[in-house]
Picture (cartoon, one colour):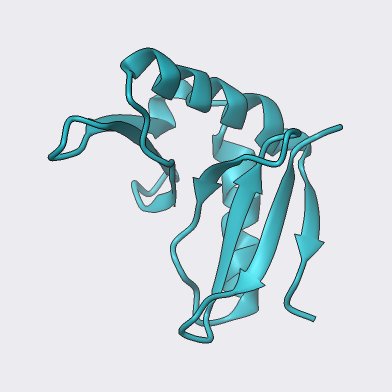
Length: 111
């Protein structure tokens, strides 16, 4: 089973998507978008940028949790990971995005 993008309406009536791995775990969450087409463009951007390691920015939170952001060519953030307890786990999350995003299907829950 491949990964999938799940498009939904956020609590503020805007659009947001999650990239889920084949096991159903969320591996990347988008920003919110005012219009559905913006979210769909964001999904396309994740697919196009996910295989390029230079698009990932590895970070550490204030409480020493590891996470990453995926950026588009214009340096805009298109997705943020969950937090991980170790850098190794974060790298596994990046690998999962690289493996799942390019062929992920779309589950549209906005309809």
